[in-house]
Image (tube, rainbow over all chains, first blue to last red; front, side, top):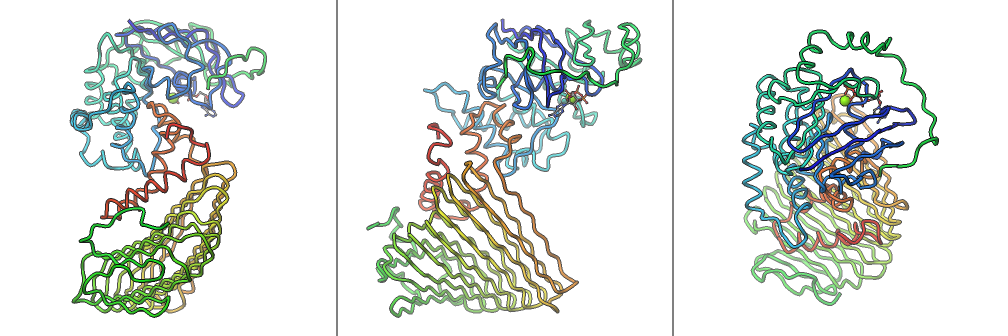
Length: 271
Length: 315
Ligand SMILES: Nc1ncnc2c1ncn2[C@@H]1O[C@H](COP(=O)(O)OP(=O)(O)OP(=O)(O)O)[C@@H](O)[C@H]1O
Ligand SMILES: [Mg+2]
């Protein structure tokens, strides 16, 4: 069974400490959800796992199957089985969706094996159909001019074809209408297997009705402050995060993140 | 270069000028030739197949005139291989009233110094879809003038310039809207690697009284190395209210967000850059129905964007 483990993770962006000691263990087959107020560091966690060059790992470890990956390049992490469906998928003009996904799938073929293009085309078309994406989308430029919902579906399309071991889905539900939410939810659930661990970042209960998490974590100000089961979701949906702040003795959820002096414990710089 | 780098099918409609001498001439082509000046003309009743013109082993300056007569509909591909030397060339295209056509020009420049004067004239209701690819050239200067001389004339121009090492290219492209209801749309893609330098001045000019005209330009440049440089100076000179005009430019390194996104799906840096640059080149490659040439062009451009060692071995 695969594992993805986050150990004592401190991460800063532009000299501002965002993640303040995050610990998390995800095993293959498990679905974890992270919820939390805006700006608490959920996407930061997602991006540092993938290796975004703007985020700086001050200390801590990210282990994939017990192997530290923080020194690995972004593309190596991907080929090692990590996938991030981004909150804001990037538009790449001039590169068609199809060519891009084909190159990505090709990049994970073993050296001695060539991609069978015919087979790939069929797989691509099937995946697009299952996500109810218009057929024209494959020959359009990557995410350029895609609607919010189309971009999100396109992330899931890539996930289906790249078959990761661990997938982080960052607000895959935002911008989706009711039908699209169901389609995306069903497609993600369709991929559920003991070979796939998932981390869902979301604000709403809706998505979690389709994708039922085994664990729910609440992140506030760069820390996971509570972990529980799906009962947490409903509570947050009804009551927000205020009860937590009372329970945990946090006065305000929106105050300034504390300044962090760099260079004291900075050792690993993920690149 | 003693022979052509790729082979034309014997059946293709190809004019070959080797060392300033006509070596192959398709049947039915109207060609006048006087020392180093060549004049081709096409009328509505003759030749509608795409026509290839190949110029290589050039040993003197060369002048090429192409004339699309009224109501003709022609497609011309010009492959111009410039050998080492110093040259002052001229190419002109005259599109008579109601003619329409498509022209692809590739200047593959290995000279020490090259000047190219390019004049395109459009008469009433004519329409020209023109593409110019400039590859290499130690020191190359192109003066590219487009004259929209008749009402409802319409010009579409696509440019691709690729250079590397310490090559220098300067292009002055100017479109003159001299009649009402004329249209021009220019798109340029510029790629510099190593110490390559590319500068484009792109001028759209609408004189007073030429209402209903539309003049647009879009320039994109990408620099693949620290020492490379791409500069675009767009200029719109408009002396009339009732017109549409606009320009956009995006020049820079490859967008790091785009790179990250592609890499996050498992493409290494070289593959990711390659895919992004292909996006610039593809519109040009797609214009060639003639596959061996598209392949040749792709290989040439590949060599350049590989650079000295920038993109690594894996390309
Ligand atoms: N690239 C960046 N440059 C500067 N600041 C950043 C960057 N990325 C994140 N931050 C800051 O880090 C903090 C955490 O942001 P993050 O995107 O991780 O929040 P989030 O929990 O995902 O919020 P949301 O629910 O709104 O998506 C915010 O204050 C944000 O402004
Ligand atoms: Mg976020």
